Image (cartoon, rainbow, N blue to C red; front, side):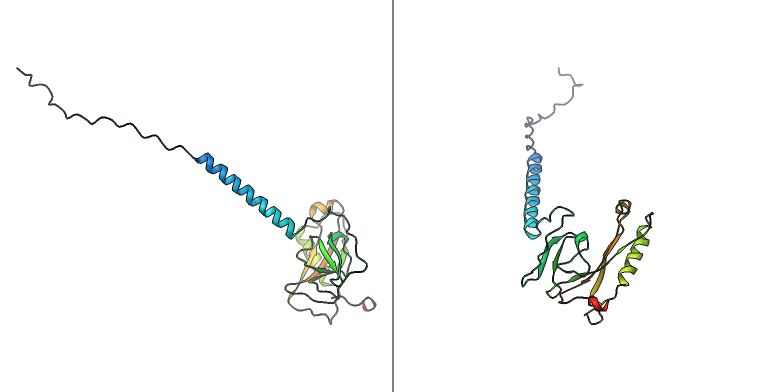
Length: 194
């Protein structure tokens, strides 16, 4: 006789399928590919920039001036700002801190170094005070009233920072630059009228 206390028979479970192997991670390959792409992009940018804007000479090195500029009017290229002379006209000006292309004022240019000032004092006056003083000094320079000055001109100036002040820098250099286009001629009064 069969025991009535036995559990009822269960259906057989299907055999277990082996777990599929996980796909091999390709993260390492993607990282290497991304690094290679970034390196190539950086190299391309570096090469393009070298051709567009050749590296200037050593900082502070004076560039030789051409005493007889040709039809293009170029006197010097890559001139460090500290070697510019008051009244020089500049082609391709973007910032008073960049090396400049000096040209004759009769040739096309978009900026001019209109003056420089040596500041006094031992203690650094503070960035805001120095900014205001530099702006006032630059705007005090007499300009030729017959020059084509209008609202398209902007004052730019370089001035000492706290770090350069402690090294003895007291020079403020004043530039006027044209927002768009070029002119021919100086913005300053002729020497006999100054």
